[in-house]
Every structure is written in structure tokens, then in C-alpha cells.
Length: 76
Image 1 (cartoon, helix red, strand yellow):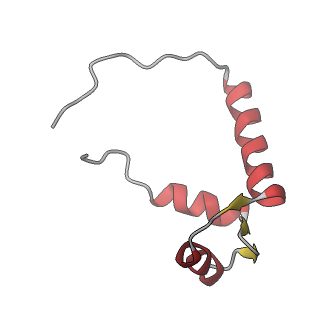
Image 2 (spheres, helix red, strand yellow):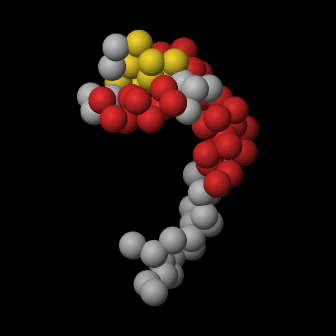
Image 3 (tube, one colour):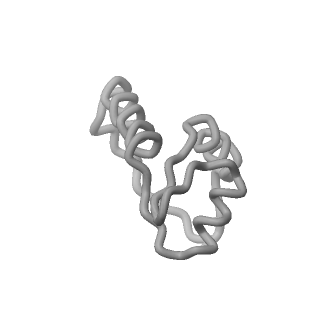
């Protein structure tokens, strides 16, 4: 398996990272994301997300639950 030999950069302070995270969550909750594929919208609707036309608005707790399920590493 290939591994990135470079050290990660810390360009942002923890407060800045938290601000970006909070704003991203606000966008997902209040503005939403347009999905043109009907099956994608159906999957989100079945997961309990609010779907209006092509737009899906996400529940913050659901998004964070999905993030927690993501493996720390995976092979491409």
C-alpha cells in the first residue's frame, strides 16, 4: 500500500478549523446541496433528510454520525 511520506501542514488554528466546520454545517442544514440524480435524493430522503426538488438539506447529527463511521484509512 502506498503511504504519503509528507508531514501534514497545520495552516489553521484549532479555532479556525472549528469556524470552518460550523459554517459548513450551517450550509448543509440551511442551504443544502442540489443532487441531480433521483436515486441519490431518494437515499437521502429515506435516511430522513429534507428533500425539496433537487435540493437536500442535511441534519447536522446525521452528517456527524456518517463522519464517525468513516474509516481512518482505506485503499484506493
